Image 1: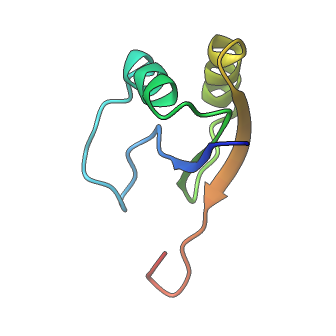
Image 2 (image 1 turned 90 degrees about the vertical axis):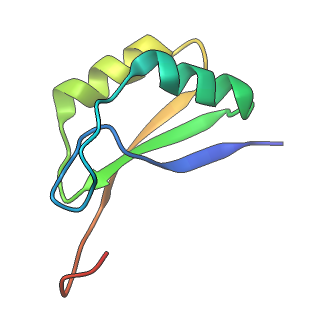
Length: 76
């Protein structure tokens, strides 16, 4: 069975409360939830260098997908 979290935010945007991304906290989340896959889905932005860094660091833990949470009509 595949367990996935396809809604991971790693960048604070105008749609988020301010937060500091922490790779170790993400690793704990992946481990605690026994995830096989995650998707990095920030609001309206894709940061390729950050995505590549996260994907490379987590490559032995799970599959990391790129994504974007798109806002439309002032909602998301």
